[in-house]
Image (tube, rainbow, N blue to C red; front, top):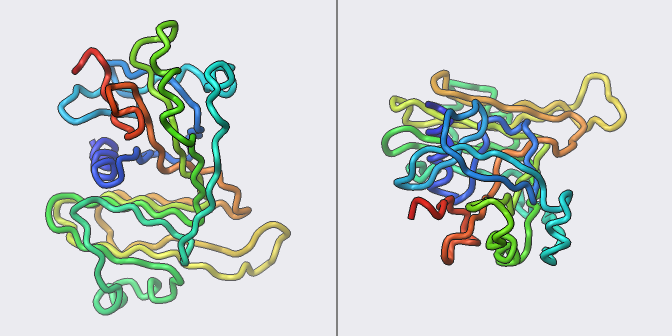
Length: 250
């Protein structure tokens, strides 16, 4: 199951959930339950040593009035502070290496990418997520969610989206066990026919013909993709670490 493998690999390194389909909206305050059953094609979550389950969204605490009831602050949005504007999330078996040499010879277009990176995977499958100019919306502090999560009138074991990365441009890659290195770059060029609100033509490139690669660029720069987010659930002190630990499985 490529989706499950990709999500597990990036959860292990980031403690956040990487969406297989970032075009599906995910917003801070979305809440629901983890249940067992057949997994839908786009949304699956699991914890270590726990049976696979699915997240069923039941609402949003800001739309439902729950945030106001429990005095939960509105989300804060933080702009990206990196010098390149691109965030890279990689699996734990990935090590960054030089992008020049053989890779550039294999895919000459990568040499023209203003932003690029190359990763070598030590063993097994590797995963990479790239986000250009992402913002991070968070509930701060995440511990403010504890009273709501512990409310006996709500379904037992609810989980809440407490942090969401939103971006106008992303690329995700899941390699095969045989792939030992991949380079990914973002090539930007001026449009042949400039239009109002459209900055440039942008395209994600990658050096590997094997594996699963998907990328999207929103020409108007609107942040309508949601590649990465955090879930919180009430389980002892785990309210702020994003672990999914339903109470009946402890």
